[in-house]
Length: 213
Image 1 (cartoon, rainbow, N blue to C red):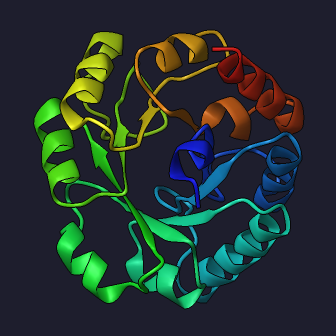
Image 2 (image 1 turned 90 degrees about the vertical axis):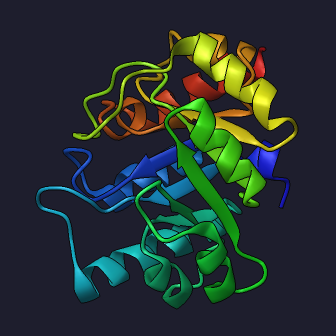
């Protein structure tokens, strides 16, 4: 897997991130050209247990039908069970070394970083990619940290060298190109696609914005 290329339009969604059927939204986003997908099932109304696993499996099948990598947020056990392509962990989750030992050899492990120190430490610990942000203010995550801005993103890019980097937090069609110009290899999107009237067209427009840079 070419991680940089896969990170271009990284769609993140759980069953409670949009008004529509999440499988339909994902199918539309895949048809619109997303390059990576992360199943993030958290917050009020989130599925658990067998229901969560069934949705994850169906989403993975959809992604693989479109040759798009499928990731699971935080839940390492679930990622292994559904044979995901990788897992994304946050700062409060299991350490990357422990995750690496538990996962199949092919697993890609991404790590969130909300500041420069966390990004440097994650890169040094062997993260396959860093998810930096929030770049802009966001309402999707209730515990979101202070935005790092484009300047903060550029500095993280400098500090982590060649480690692949995706930016997250408040990214929309209007600011996607600026995020790419600030050093990101791709953009991570939740509401700009999951809450769009037409997820397919939203994904297409975002992809056009970043591939022009």
